[in-house]
Length: 265
Image (cartoon, rainbow, N blue to C red; front, side, top):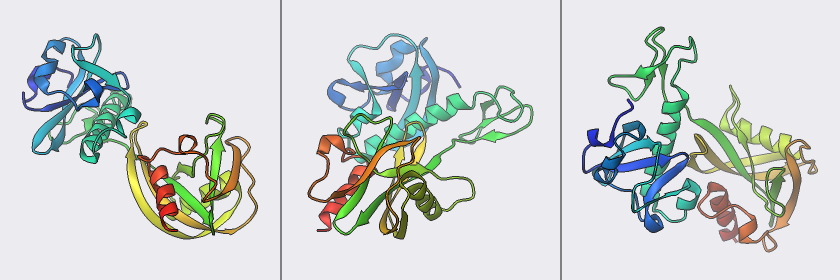
């Protein structure tokens, strides 16, 4: 399905990636229409792939290899989260995940044969064994554990010094979301939780996660950070949290969980 931007509708919005960065109009003012990318005819390495519509306009995703067209700049999706409205950001996330799927399944995971695009489904199909390869989304749970006025924050070894976040981890085969919450909190910080309450979810394209947020009440135990993953974990009073720059950003589901806890009074 590698092709040129010219094969897409001229009115379509083009979510075009250079590496992991999305080409946007200067100052993050949205994405270009397909005609802006016509000059990239020989540099489009993936696409255009249809990804749906936004406000009645078709949207496509492409990847390019080469120079940047005039008037467009490459920005990371994390940079765009605080700038764009949710519908536009949602389509950018979808574009990123479709592109990741397209590249990740160029060959069949069962027999190794090069795959081709399915004629009617958004899937890659193996011409040798017939296996269909759809986009894979990895569910992960993220949990705000609270104890009265306090909430639990942890610092992963990969975080910069002083930055704290919520406990999170991937759902394992055979688990429910609730079981994953209990296991992850127990494994990462050594405590038990109860009274789980679903908060919300967020598509997280790094590269293809679905983050599912929960509140959980402290039940028992003392904090014992998992040595291989957690550098530090402790209780923070609601009035003595790390500064906004040292905790998850407001656009993330972790940031929204913290904001909702603080708003409860």
